[in-house]
Image (cartoon, rainbow, N blue to C red; front, side, top):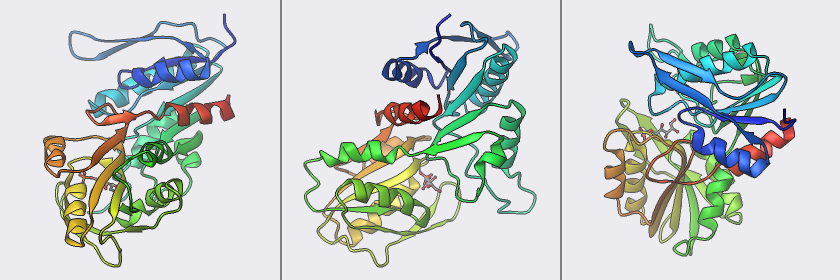
Length: 300
Ligand code: R5P
């Protein structure tokens, strides 16, 4: 049996598992995922895991509930089969945005999600730009050493080479995006950055106001963590064009792209629309594997 860590990919994590194993020099194993006739999931770990450090990669997307069940069942099985340390790499952690009871009677989804993760007792969790705005201690909440890394540096490497970015500035579409705008601005050579003001009217509708940002005749990189319906980016682009922005490109970490979001965004005539591969989509061209491997090397 090899002493190298073993990397396993779930249904939405295989592409990254292959890249991670190859970049880190770890062994790539496999997990079989099938369906019973009544639609229940059947999971079988095909590699020997007993006594080994195991890295399991799966994003909670493209069948968000199925991938959550698949992930929890697999993680529990790994421990049950005697894996030494289990690192759960969840590049896109869903159910994180419902992090408060915004209306009476609502389920605070992230609290339940964390409880489920606590029940399978993994040793480490690595996520990429998880929505942690209202979570002060993710280690305690998830019951594991929690590593929330960023994919924005990988996105910035891409924008650094963009020819259309002659007079760059960086904009986050809302206050919460300031953290990503700051990183992107630093990586682009300490260019200016700012944020817009966003009010959400419904899951599909937002209103964006641009106050106090200077984008006139500038080439703007909009950076955000998620594109879901695309409403935020559409409104942000309108607001920035209204202020005289010259050219606009968009970089996001998680391209969820629900419904007709991709078509809506294509119609905006952007210089660039790019995302990382935490979730696979037509715009997921930047790999977060190097950032994940860097974190894994610190852990294992
Ligand atoms: C909000 O907290 C996030 O940072 C994104 O701005 C938001 O989830 C994007 O959603 P949509 O594409 O549906 O506007």
